[in-house]
Amino acid sequence: METIAVYWEPKPKTYGFNEVTNLSLLNIEITEEKMDQCGLWLIEMADLEISFHLVLAKYLDNKKLRLYILIEKCFEDNVLSHVGKHVDFELEKDFTITSPVELICFQGPHFGDRYGIADTVLNTLDSQDMQVLITVCSGSTVYIVLPEGVLGAARHFLSKAFEVP
Amino acid sequence: MRINGIKLSNELAQINLLNSYDPYALRGLFFRLLQENQINTPFVLVTGMEKKIQSSCCVDKKDINRVKKMAAIEPSLKENIELISDVGSLTLFPHHSNLKLLGLSFYIFGKTKLPIYGMASSISSLTFITDYSKLNYAFSAFQKHMDLSSNNTLLEPEIHVIQKKF
Image 1 (cartoon, chains in turn yellow, brown):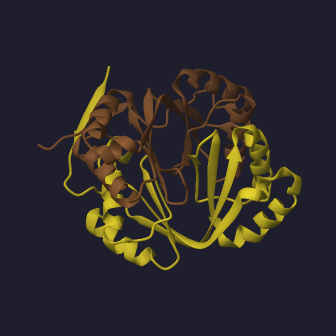
Image 2 (cartoon, rainbow over the protein chains, first blue to last red):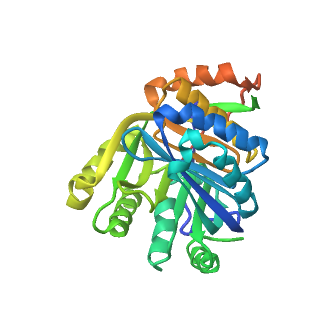
């Protein structure tokens, strides 16, 4: 039996914005052949109790991915020293850190099942010429990674496009 | 490693939007047309840091012909869209913001030679996009490596949500 819920709201509701500053964005290119090694490397990093705010991997080309990990800036030295211990692993060849960066994320009812959410987010920020590093819509959550200093403006414009409690 | 559940999606198609001479305008046009055509994108990744692909998103398989029609009448879109048909998502939860589940997942994908076309975390889950035809194989591989809760709960209730203007 299928249950169908019909839904419409002129301005999408959210459960409120979450904002985090002082973050670092790690960025690693990985090939399909090195995927398992990269996995082991991440498991070792987990043992250092480095937690993340967001992870994503974007398909590049030729069976390559770019993995992004958004962490607290205070973990940056730990990560760098961990990467330094894997000189023969060649991960560091394509490893960069962008820091500091900021995150604004929010959820809304059935966001993952509704058209137009991504368009509203992108259109809101693009129309203000805001520099955005990453936008992710995954499940019911929207994540926006921004350069330092623009989070307040992003919140201002997003709160005009989305209903905030 | 103990997890509470794995969820497999219906058949999807991944659309990669390539970089063009005006990537912002192209992206704006693409997502606006998706919105106007009432096409949902349950998974979207946008980054401005890669040379070839600027954005990726997934749509339900039933919507792919509408996306193709939409692109066919817009030359800039037609030239800058790359389609990976027959993909599906595998969602694991919860991740507890810990890199261990991500690492183990990459290890399993690497060892089983399963492709990853995209991946992102959500508030409590990790979603991987891979070949739809290999989802059950992926599920078996994850079952072997992970201690899956005996009642493998679904991530969300099986309610189909439709947006409509009244």
